[in-house]
Image (cartoon, rainbow, N blue to C red; front, side):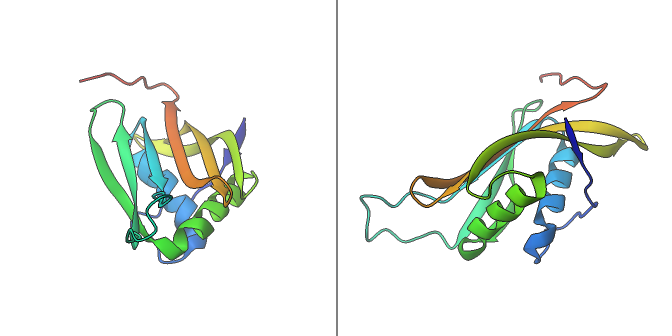
Length: 143
């Protein structure tokens, strides 16, 4: 399994090159869960207003809660998907990959296991799902 190195960026950066570091770190801080983001389909609704901001929603597997951890302008969404794909080593149009990131837990780096599913294809859809599915030595407990 590939291991990726990320910087600790605690607030959402303006620079899309740093967004992968931010979103993966935000997930590592929150624990086992998933992040989802997508451009809303407007097929069949030609007059529907387009959302100017795309939320990145985090769903906790342990607490069964959700929160918005990032919001990006609509015009930045596809470039961010492409940047995340490039950062992880998959096609900027569609793909899936699993990898680990070393993130501190109680002061020591611990492997955090991620899986990304991404679709950035104009003929299909624009969405991403990122799963933090395992933290070595820690197992999720449900509340």
